[in-house]
Length: 147
Image 1 (cartoon, rainbow, N blue to C red):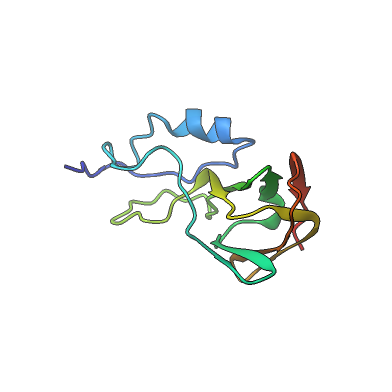
Image 2: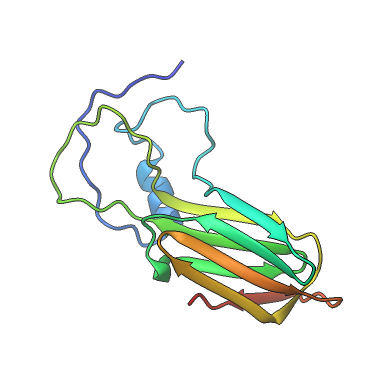
């Protein structure tokens, strides 16, 4: 059973970190009181490979590029960031709330090793596309610049 909140929600100010968001919203009565989701959210992703590359596409609409980080960690790709709620600082009563805000982390196990020197990440129109050349050598940790 999902309990619908009757309170009026105020748009919050920006959060400095995921911890700020978590602690500010843990007992937030403006969202449904019971949820079947874990705290936080996970963006939708596609991952496919060709003969030479592995490609990951993440749907990240409404996220400022400066709030995104992409890291290669051994055999995994980690995408983390935060989607901040923007509004005109007016009180409002929601009738439906499906868009999720706050911090997220998505970890994808890669099907093979990739060359950390041959990775391209491009963010446009709400999609982050990461193209990685396959390699026989794995790397410990490498942060990827987003174009």
